[in-house]
Image 1 (cartoon, helix red, strand yellow):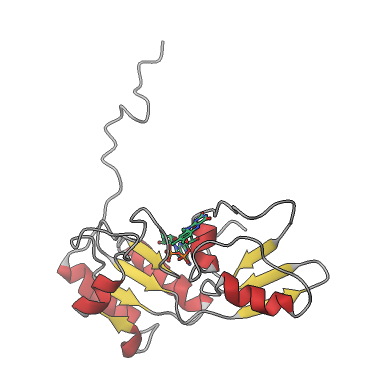
Image 2 (tube, helix red, strand yellow):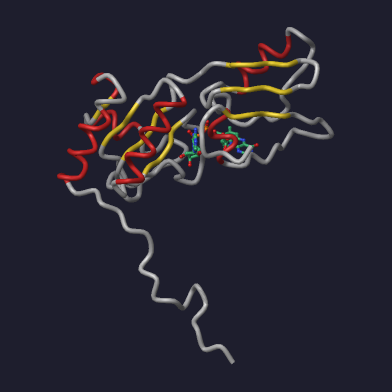
Length: 191
Ligand SMILES: Cc1cc2nc3c(=O)[nH]c(=O)nc-3n(C[C@H](O)[C@H](O)[C@H](O)COP(=O)(O)OP(=O)(O)OC[C@H]3O[C@@H](n4cnc5c(N)ncnc54)[C@H](O)[C@@H]3O)c2cc1C
């Protein structure tokens, strides 16, 4: 019989993260080649505002070190690469309505706030195919769709956005026998 341990019994130490001040400082210099300085924030108030919400609380220690505000897919991609190369953990923030403490940056690192990416890029009424950036809210989407007699059926919290909905694999609690297609305009999503 094979005596090798299964994944739970193995001695795998888990992912390695580097949130040392030196690494974060060097990363910040690289982020500054991607984003204007005003879109790179480390103020305490902003960092705290991204660790959770009234409905989804987290420990104050679960705060990202930096909050970044990209404006395009390309910027998201470049930020993600820098974090990946430097082993810096990354969390995302869209509408901020997620429950269960899902916004907590338990390992610190970088929080990407998608609030500047709120455009519907393409909306094809004939086949109901939509390309949307992550902070298009479902209510915003419905306002557009209503012009052509269509609607997007899920209805979570009013401020919920496509990014968080896809990430959470939204339960579609009010979606019955209606088919919607959605393409998210950021890299990394298998849609
Ligand atoms: C009144 C109320 C009703 C609700 N009803 C439902 C319901 O019926 N069904 C249901 O499933 N949920 C429901 N929710 C929970 C919540 O609204 C949904 O899960 C919603 O999808 C979260 O979207 P958001 O944009 O607010 O995401 P956020 O809160 O910003 O984020 C949620 C999670 O997604 C990640 N994330 C966010 N944006 C991105 C991105 N662009 N890329 C990668 N990851 C990202 C975050 O890191 C976090 O882990 C409800 C909440 C409330 C307050």
